[in-house]
Structure formats: structure tokens, C-alpha cells
Image (cartoon, rainbow, N blue to C red):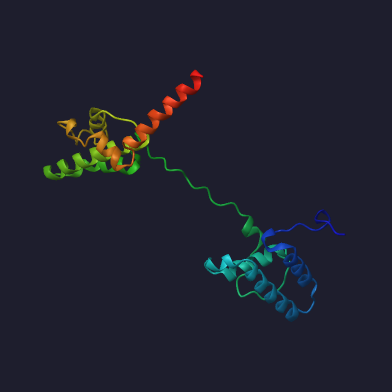
Length: 209
């Protein structure tokens, strides 16, 4: 009886032991034409074993790459694609630099901050008024989405003025959309409040026992 511990390692386990054995056999074939036919047959079997690869762009190219990987790049056959080299597959990806832009308030994000900073380039009073109200309500909504609580209108007004470098000033912060209206539009209305209240009452009863 042969145990897996005595067998060679499966380089790509998703193809199974039989495919690995077929590749090992192909490596022993001396005639190149026969070896090419064996490689084509192995590719067909690999495709049948992994039908999900058919949804991948150029899936046959992927199968051929896997064939060479499983042969430890020792199989010499005529591939319809460029034969990969072990070094190219072992290269580490280039490091992606993390954006270094300074975001003053994380819950508003980079783009809201950029929009508000660009307010200085707007000359039309009507456009500034529209931007001021629209962005203030959006900021309030974003604040609530991250805090799931409440926020004072003057806080939004102060942050609007700060991020716009003094270009957008709310004369009457209380004109902003009511908090409950925003919470309901986000699906965080009275239902959640009732749930939280009931949950807290149950917890109190539990610890009193």
C-alpha cells in the first residue's frame, strides 16, 4: 500500500495526483511529437477538472502555465504561448505606495475634503449657497453613518467652515435636515432605538437575577 507521505508533493493540489503522474510520465517521453501529444491530452484533462477556469480570460493560457509549473519547468514541449520562467513567477510585486494625503476627518473622506477646498474657486454666490447646504447635509449624514448616534448642527457648521478654509459659512446651522430624517433615510430609525432599548432592559434583568 502506498501512502501520500511517501509520494512526491502536489505542486497544484487542485489538479490531483493523477494529473501530476501524467506530467511525470510525459517528462519521460523521449520523442518530442509524442511528448507534445501527451501535453495536449493533459491540458484537456486539466480543463475538464477545473471548468471554472473557462470563465477566466484566456483560460487555456492559464492551463499551460500551470502545466509548466507542475513539471517544475522541466517539460520541453511546443506551447502555443510563451513558456514561463520560474524566476518570473517568483518575482515579488512592486510595492504600492499608500496615499500620503492628509485627511482631516476620516469619516468624511478625501473627496469631500477636496470638494470643500475647491469652494474658493467658485465665484457665483448661488452656486456657493447650493454647495454649502448640500455638502453640510451630506457631511451630517456621513457623520451619523460612522457614529450611529447624533451630532450638533453647529459641529457640522464649524467643520464645514474649517474644511472649506472659511469659504462656506452656515449662517443658521439649524436649517440643516433633522437628524431623525437622516437616520430614517439610512435605515437607522426608531426600530434600532427600540431594539437597543429592549436589549439594554433585558441585560439589566439578566444581571439582577
